[in-house]
Length: 455
Image 1 (cartoon, one colour):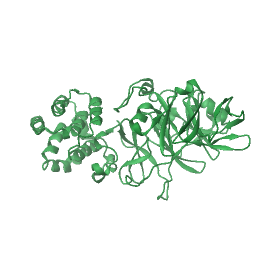
Image 2 (cartoon, rainbow, N blue to C red; image 1 turned 30 degrees about the vertical axis):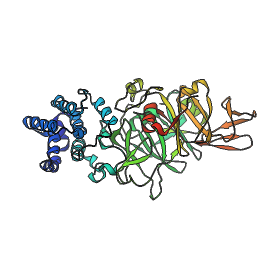
Image 3 (spheres, rainbow, N blue to C red; image 1 turned 120 degrees about the vertical axis):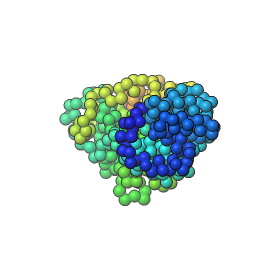
Image 4 (tube, rainbow, N blue to C red; image 1 turned 135 degrees about the horizontal axis):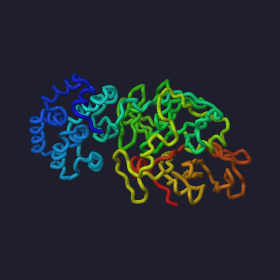
């Protein structure tokens, strides 16, 4: 991830740094942190000595930014960071980011804002729409600026699929039976979006069954969440893209109307004009399952075409192959692994004013789990082999598995559909929105505010 000083400046053009250079002359701390990337060697050494003597760790977030993008000066920057914090973490950017997450009491020096802006605009000048200084003040953000990390791509470097081309199941000869898909059915409109394609795009904006939606797929945290995009107070549905930024190994998506940054996991704006809007995107049910299972139960389904308008290797198991096979994270995030490993899968539900997760492994013991969230009885049907879980309200019923359906305690059979489970008398128990996720993301974003099934 390191960029040499020469290529870094070349990305933005020399003129991009002139305003900050003028500010730096009026702020010795800003001038010092800028020297990690832009100063002469003798100036840099003097500035590092100044920061050491100053003795305040509030400059560590800025130094950490400089360290990540510096080659030749990394060891010297780390020496200052270690002196200011008393921690010996070497040149391991990952570990320093974890230290930063553990120490929210360290409030960054104000120079972090202009310096981080300068660095990130040097990567991509288009980042400017996300990094307006007025929205980067600590009291204006829902997340910590120092924890926003560049994910290695520019704005829209992971291009969204907007109203993509769909084809019939019969014409999808590129699909293999065990390929995983995101299955969506709204008002009888049945769609399949293969993960082997969505892994390259991480976002689609579409209208399904007359409902404008976006599927936000964070490959790093294993979660694909379907959101409604028509929100209160706006005439047109929001259209989302990938910003190129991460927060605790979770993608920050953005809406194209206001360029606010949104937390993909919670569906809430965290930086920008919509931060105080009170908006939370409403979730819609989505399931991960195999192509064979989906097309068998939904023979009229349409599926995403390979004709996306982009050149990618959409082969089975290609995208993020090494990451998905590894137990390690690609970007830093603190996680409690006392009961679950960081990349164990869970099924996550955030509804009815509460949040609860069910480990996918729990469905190895039984495919049907009767449980509740916030006092609301639920039944969950899962298949770990297909990474598939669906949740429904169950009222006073208690269910067990029966063939491809459910059976209640009175022996009556119920039919499972994408929108509800249906009794012989026509009674419908509605689907509850949820999604699969890696444990680390659930633990990091929900933490003590959520409960976890341990039955």
